[in-house]
Image (cartoon, rainbow, N blue to C red):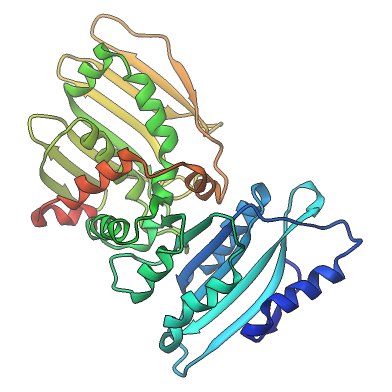
Length: 365
């Protein structure tokens, strides 16, 4: 990012024009395919959100409007600044506008009026909502109605059931398409399972599984502490697609068990792997009552390779391989921005989670 210039709100476009004028003849191309609005409270994840915005413009240039609510400021305060974000690829030849808007709690209702004049017309608007949508926020509906697509970050919530209910409510109120970063992070595993069990025979085997174990990376960082969410999403997706009904849950420090009526028991196991991103799925195990077994495990050297083993009491199939997308910070945002519409599978999953009974909430907290 080039130098940041603190300006008055009415000077934003004027200062951006001056910056670009100063860059003429320096091999910089101003480009924007869409508008990206990032909304968050001031917290430890701000640097992470800036990082994924940088990763995004490396692939797809856009105008970034970063709205931060700072609860530590007591008086009525509005701070604005502008800068140019340069891509780290292609020698930094492409650059994008960055508009920072910092509001105190007393002035946060001004956010839509601060954002609207600076949206590039005739381009899609994507809103990355970095706060917990289950918390009451009068701004959410106003900003969401501006958006072509609203991308939520389930890492921001402490209760996945409340999160699911809130996201469904937000979608109904705004009418915008919705997505979720953690949903995007398990896309490769969903594709792999869909390919593995796509035949009628294999699907019948899946329906009759008795034990399913999902092992995930419980590593924590300053940016990620709810590292069980991707595993919870994957098991809830399996259950919703097979119309399984949750009966009971049990949780301790190392494992979470979810028992489904006349179906499988799904166990989520925590394992710390420093070389992988927090929350990533490490391996899956499907065990049938007839001795049928499917095992999916990441390669110990090339983590984007998953080895697939299938065996029964009568034969052992030669191992297959599935290639996951190589992990890159910001890649899940790229995926969720460019998906069309709202995933029907994601909606099914949200409805599944929203229906969890109070006695089973602890597994999702």
